[in-house]
Length: 450
Image (cartoon, rainbow, N blue to C red; front, side, top):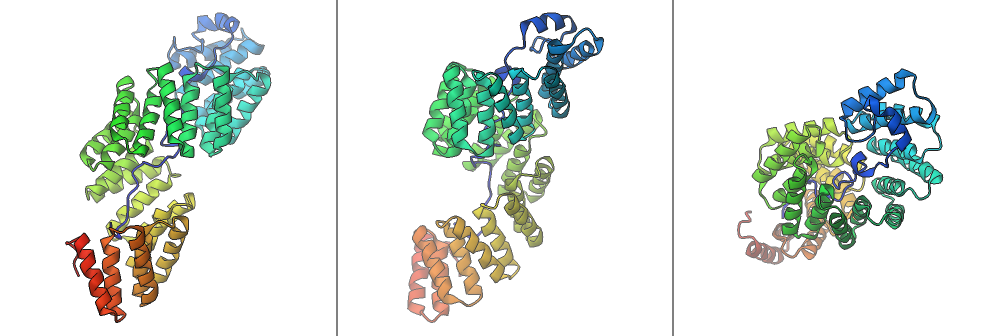
């Protein structure tokens, strides 16, 4: 280990990494009323997958304009067009259609569910929860609305409410694979990996073609360090759905964790081919290029990731790492600043910003950042080591020795901390103690230089 900056390559249990966005219409939406479908069928406005989204949008648009439909049937036409817009990613038009449909039929649990799903896709989780709750007020037995509300609670980090909703969805529909998978995500975010794996496995038993469940179970296995099972699940997810870009990102992160950056980059390349707007793929590929010391390609990818998702603390952090490695410390600090604004509990970012301040010969600012990193993670041996160096820079040898000692206690194989303690002991007049530390450090790492 060393005082160098550290990369994050998408292994964190964040909702954006787990496949929470499973409010897909193919899995989730209840069918619209049969009588409405019979009336709208001639317009190809069925709300089903029998016609393409483009056909649905045109056909439902013609039905709406025709003047032949009113009331609840017109609401169905608008809802079906909204569904097609949603599938195409046009959330603004989808919401506009759902708004009109709900005005026409305010007692439809399905309509509120669909608008909830659209708000979820927009990451407006409070409105998603509000509409799912209205749907359940109309129909307390509508399992999919419990599922949708549970997904929104998970995205907000309200895991206990999420699990309660998924439990209810499963009670109402024990065959709902997506509810088991959603509950698995909630358990995984909570850190209960064994329960998560059990739920993903049940989802897969119920639907062996559920690519997202395979992908999520792979993430859970990877978190447990069971890389063989993780790789098998990622392979299965990709085999089932070769266009499932997040699975390539996850498999790439597994390759990266094994040090195989070339295979990682190949998977990130494929993820980007499938979904050019997937910010995580660019962010992770940037991290892989960084590991290969290809800083120009890394920066290009991380810049693109920031453009696609300016709310990702992880991406700003990784770009800060590259700027630090290129010795552009002002830009590094600016990126760490933004990462910390977006995610204040981020000990790596605090520690790396401290290191950048040290590179600028600002030991007081560095110490302040290391203090916060250690407050957030009292087991952070690198932060103790680096704070010790900042104290040594200020010739505060007593505090430096104390920090190096703590770093060595937390990680007995931390040769650098032991070596630096030896150097500082010599500077403070304890030559015998310093020599003993240097000898001990070189036994751990013979490559250490003066």
